[in-house]
Amino acid sequence: MAQELAESRLFDDAESELISRAFDMLGAIAPRDSDLLRAHLDRLPELSSMIRKLPSLYATESFAGKQRSLETLVDYLCENDGLSGELALPLKATLARTFLVAKIQFLRGFVRVTDAQVDNGGPNAEEFEHIADELREELAQSIYTQLAEELLLALLRKPNVRITTKRRAARQLVAIWENAELEIDDFCPLLESAWHARNRVNADLGSLLGTSEYFNLVCQDCAPQFLDFFNRDEVPLQQAQAFEEFLFDMTWEELSTLRSEMRLHSLASITQTWAAEVLGREIELERKEGRIDPLALYRSYFRRQLAADFRIVAGRPGPQRTAEAYMMIYLLDSQNALDALP
Image (tube, rainbow, N blue to C red):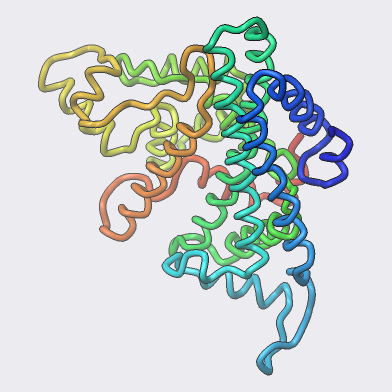
């Protein structure tokens, strides 16, 4: 099965071997779950085939009396304000995005099933725990890939991003859509490193200085280039605010509320429970009981991204981009930055 998966181009060799091994174990213990996962897996090649049959986004062709090319597509994407959503994207782009979501849903299902075997404490629980951890890593990488795509799309709709930066972002998106099997380590390993580290760190909060959160990122091998970018001399205020959001997994408004309440109640430090009561929402954890939760990281990014968009529209103070967006803009504007990263 591993060879068949690898030849289908749905997964790389390591992923194919892992999925094949997991199916072998699961089929003997939970055949119903195994069959449902196989049915989901069998739908992926059909979607991948549809994508490959569509014309290349790099091709030049004539339609409705106008010439279409990579350059006209880049121009079109740079005019995108985000209000049309998926309707504004080429069909191949939409299907490529759908393929990635389908792959994520398949891996999420596999993680749930293997976690259930671990929690049930059967005779193979230890081996299932190892497989579940590996599957969770593959799931995380796919989610990081989708995050990078959403980040690039967000840059295109920002009114205060330079057109040269937008054009580079658009070209990177076209490259991703053209090859649905592309993953984040193929085009932006630095952000993958930052998300990989952040996914293993729960904010301590404490005095809200961020010292322990920063140290924990270092301990989780967060790319030093990412940390140094926000720790350089005379870093702009909005970039510093966005990095705080990233550290604490909260919006700038939420952090301002917590600090105000700390002063009001003369508190030197706070807990996640106290913060949840003040903010009126659950504080999600990127790591629970030793297991990473990449979906919590995904939700964190979107919370911060929505807040940044709102500030622009409403003319409110605070960072107008996420920390990841500031980093991506720097990379896009640096000559050959994406290719030069290790």
